[in-house]
Length: 91
Image (tube, rainbow, N blue to C red):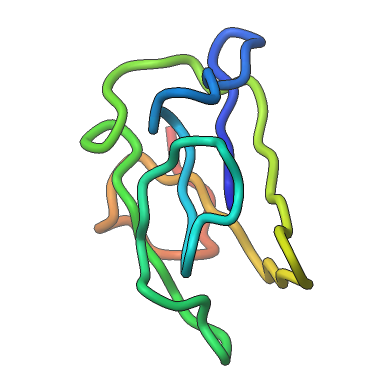
């Protein structure tokens, strides 16, 4: 599960707002499912936070393992998905 705080507040547990999960959601927290099963190998998942959750000011990020380990190798926040990965934005 991956949660995003907005303006210092974590999402409410009863709404699938700013929260993703893969596999079966074993918690009482409502979340947006992004895969029917947790990946068995390294997998790239690209999500559009604005499209999924609208405007918000990101103030926290919480990768959470539920009922077993979860491996997060890299999390990138980009302005668009067309930007080259691993290269800083130019002003």
